Picture: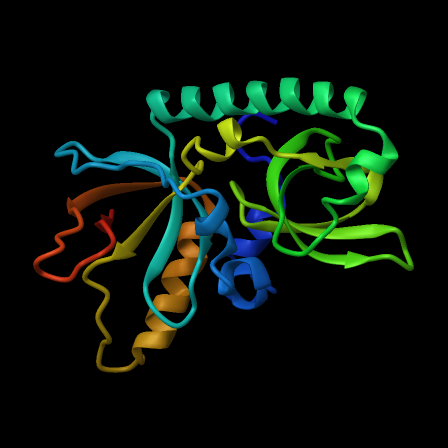
Length: 220
């Protein structure tokens, strides 16, 4: 899958779903930024661009989006190829004893996705020794999975320093109307965004002096 892997993203984007952002220990504990410190850089473009919704926050208008521009698609594909090559090497070289030390919550790793059996960058959220399984969060797609321990390998520093495959932005201009509260307006907007790709324009980048820490975008 070139642009939508893992496929559970669509489910995570719906307002009534069990969104990973709402309960993930890796997200709440700041584990993603601790081990994958760089986010996709996104600048204001007068022409705007099309994007897909990766995930969202229900309590404030923050969206995680993936631009569909050629430049970003090439970056994602390049990362995917590097991850597969490193994972193949790691799985071939590492024995069971070597791998055992990495099964600790909060540890960055490369984890197979259960549907396509390819590897993606992840963080271990929980270890189930009884089932010999590991709960992971795929950090580039904000989707969770449960895998056997044999499907996990180390994520080396050079892969952890590559920016995440999405941009975190704040949705500008969402206002309540006379008949609907802001939460309902925002929920309906999320439903629309999850249905298909959408056109956005970044109108403001972070300004430390003004206290804004996320790019702001408008949806068209």
